[in-house]
Each structure stands twice: as C-alpha cells, then as structure tokens.
Length: 175
Image (cartoon, rainbow, N blue to C red; front, side, top):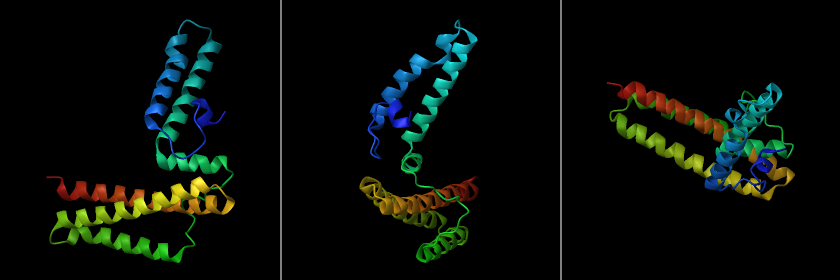
C-alpha cells in the first residue's frame, strides 16, 4: 500500500496538511503498540510494524521535498545520487556564485546585511524552483517528471546552502 492510500489521499503533490495530520493521528491511535500490550507477541510485532509504516508515511508526505521524491519514485523516476553532477552548466555556475556569496558573508562590513541578502537570494530562488517543480509534477508526463526530478535535486542543493548559512550565522553571532 502506498503512503497516499494509507491516509486515503489522492496521489498528488498538493496535500492538505491539516487533513493529513488528522488522519495520521486517528490511524496512529488505532495501530499504536501500546494498544496491543496484552496481545500476543505476533500481534505486538505487527502493531509495531504498522505504527512504523504509518509514521514513515506521515513523515514523507508532510515534507514537500520528501513528498516530491516519493511521488517521483511512484512514477518510476530514478532519482540520481546526490554526488551525481548536474548536466545544467548554468546551474553549476550558479552553485559556484552562491557558494562564493556565502563564503564572503564572514568578511562583510555589515554581516547582518550580508546574511539577510544571502537569505533573500536563497529563498527567492528556492521558491521559483519549487513552484516550477509543482507545475511539472502536476503535468505528470515522462519529460515533466524527469525535469521535476532535476528541480528536486536543485532544491536539495538550496536546502544544503541554507543549512550552511544557518551554521555560519551560529558561528558569527554566538556571543
């Protein structure tokens, strides 16, 4: 059973998170291992497996990047390892520019302003890619799924950069 079926949801990228959470909580109550404390060891094991599956499904569907990755896997799209280089030369150049921008933050005269600028750039570019990926997932053709996969990989890069910026901020402002 796929994750969408567990929660009785349509297999699409756009998910009502409140509805997902409500269904998760209801299902989790019914399969939680504590309810099977006095059951046979086989029933207890089954409850643990069901509870784990429901939790995994919820954790995947509630996070947009994981949800997109899951949808693409359901569609048979093989998502390349993160170490596989992008074939998009413009994006490779942009990666280098963004890394340089991030590296220059600690040498800025106004570190707060530099952090703010990098944050804005990352958020704007992430949002543009995210919206494009949503459209591509909705189209659901072989070519759009392949392109959505590329956008997903790029989005993961932006997430990593954002984490690096957070770490840099912690170092710079940890007084």
